[in-house]
Every structure is written in structure tokens, then in C-alpha cells.
Image (cartoon, rainbow, N blue to C red; front, top):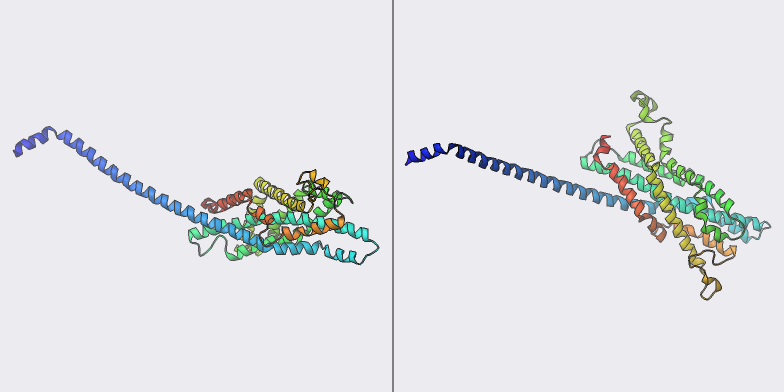
Length: 365
């Protein structure tokens, strides 16, 4: 019996070998596929966790942006009011001076100027802080992901120096903006039809847009200019040491340069203009509420959103315009501030900035 079995095997030896190879190959391929599937699932899980962590960090960063904007609005309001003080002119008018008409004219110019400046500066603050905090947020995410406790990309000292550049917007940058806007207001406002001109102010006030954008850009370059007048990327190691620049100084300058590139991009200009459009639209909507004709009035046949439907004495117009700064620069979330913070274009731009600076390839660059 054994010999017959052996004879059968010898006669079908090739078939047995072929079958064994096939079965063995299938087994090996099955094991290989199982291993690869396990690796794929593990990579998918790791990537999902990383994306979830990244998304959580981004959303947390946006909440920080919103809170930072709200915390800075009182300082911005104080700076605008101090530079464009209409209260002192109001006090003079109460004394019934001889040059009453001249004071009224100055009061009118200052009232409209500080309202327009408040809109511009608040919009610029919202967009610029979105850029800065998402640049920092991207680097912090890379540091946390890599577990960089030593030699981080954005140490606390660098973050403080970098973010302090926003103070330029509350100082010299704000004064430059006021000068440009005041000239535009003076050339546009006459003694009559003040409210009609106010409704068209957006188009006129945007004429100094390049200066306003330059002011915003200068905000992020102030520290660089005070630290060194030369581009550090062109300096040799010995030159850097001779200038007395530390590693933190160089890291700060790098962040400022990267931010300047962002501010020079068409996307930033588009988002800033969209924010300004929304800001002035919200301002005019709020002003319109004060100038709606009473029910039954002949002027009520005009469009409800037309600011030219009602004429009011200058003495009533100025307090309304003057008080808009409390609505615009409100530290409690008003409709004006909420519209800016929740603007879809601002949120999308913030996500793009964060995506750029939280990607590992940015670290390699």
C-alpha cells in the first residue's frame, strides 16, 4: 500500500509541487495583505487623530483670536477718542463763544473722522490679529507635535516680541490713518446734506486705502526696523553677531517677514476690503435706525434704508455720529464686532494661514 501511494506521488509530483507553491503563495500573500491592511488602518487612525487634534487646536486658536480682539477694543477706543476729542469742542460750544460756527465745523469733521477711523482700525485689528495669531498658532502646533521642549520654533519671548508689534496700530499707525481720513472727510463734507455724504463715505474713505494698507503692513515691521535696518537673511553669522542679534531676535524677524508676505498677498487685501465693506454696511444700517421718518410722515414713502429720507439739524446729527464709536469699539460682542469676527472670508483666510504654518513642510523650509 505504501509503495502504491509513493508511486502515485511520483507520478503526480509536478502537480503536488505546483499545488504547494500556489497554496504557499496564497498564504504568504494573505499574510502580507493582512499586515498591510493593519498598517493602513493604523495609519488612518493616526492621521484621523492628528487631524482631530489639529482641528481642535485651530478652533481653540480662533477663540483666542476673538477674545484678544475684544480685549484690545477698549484700548483702541481710548486711543481714537484721545486723538479725536470732540468732548472738548462740545464744552466750548456750551460757553457760547463768538466763533461758534467754526467750532461746529470742527466738531462735525472730528465726529465723522473718528467714526470712520473707528471702523477702519477695528477691521484692520480683526484681520491683522487673525494673521498673527494663526502664524503663531501654526508654529505652536508644530512644536507640540514634535514635542519640542528645547529649541522651539516660537518660544514665549519671541511670541511676546512678535505680538507686541500690533501696538503700532494703536500709536503711530493710528495717527497716520487719522490724518488720511480727516483729509478725506474735510474734502467731502460741506455745510449741508451731511447725512447724504455719510452714506457715500465708504467710497471716498477708501481712496486712502493704500495708506491704510501700508499702515497695517508697517504694524508688523516696526520691531524689525528697530532691531536692524538690514535684512537678516542676507547677513553672515559674523555680521549677525556684530549686530548683537540673538536667536530670539532672528526668530522674531523671521515671523515678521513671513507676516509681511501674508499682508502683501492679494488674499489679505481681498479679505480686508470685504471686512471694511461689511463694517461700513453695518455702520450705515445702525445710523439708518436714527433717521427713519416717523409713521405717516411724507418722507416715509422713501426707501426704508435711505439715509437721505430725513433731514435733521446738525446739532442732532453730531451726537448720533459721535456715539457710534461706543457701538463700533465695544468690548462686549455687539452686532458690529460679531459680523467682523464671524465673517466667512475672515474665517477661511484664517484657516489658510493656520494650514500653511502648521504644515511640516513649512518647518523644513
